[in-house]
Image (spheres, rainbow, N blue to C red):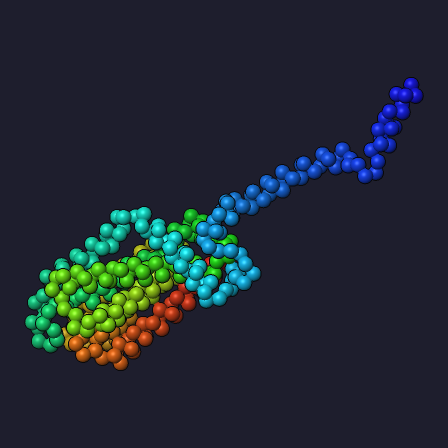
Length: 330
């Protein structure tokens, strides 16, 4: 009996004060899965699976010099370039969109060119070839019509939760929202070059040479930046596709026809000339046509192009402010 009684005492004494208790051993394994479940929930809520691979693919390392709110010019440019490349890859997977984007300007160029070619015979029109006059109009109109739908992409990313995932990455905030404007600028630059080449193949002459064509393409890019940033701002404010569709439908034709896209300013009514002087589409057209003429008025190009550049900076800054307001609301 003494032996049987002493065995539990010896085992209890042999455990010692430093030995882990059964309660402690039981509690440790239970707390570890709980921590894993909590971290897994956090990761799923953030939409970040295999974050190390994602960050390396993005070329974004969470260093001390780059924060989510700050960063130098090089880091902002790198973040914007990566986000722009992401959107370009998405566009490349939609061949139907690319085909329509290229065919529509061709239809405008040769349809309007054939329909209004006799307009040049009106006194005071100022040129003998309507195709020469029309090419800049089609370039700028294409930039306008394509860039006005940029806000639809922003809305889709907000609705699908993609935008919220970007917010947890160490990306500069302006890079997230400005990537769509940068993508539109690149697409419009390529589209403008194609339209210019098609016009040249159809018989258009560019007296201003390469410098004039460069100015035309730059103004088309500025138009794309202005209206893509404006569309992004509307998308983040309204959060409804119908609003973007309604505003685009309302603005597209008035902005186009209240300019010199298809008709010379000398043949427009006085009130139209007054409105056209305040129309950024007309600023781009006047700057491009002046640079493409045989005797460019570079002072006029500078004024019109400079005003368009200032407007592009202002609207882009507004879209960034609206994005920061959206960030605070989520």
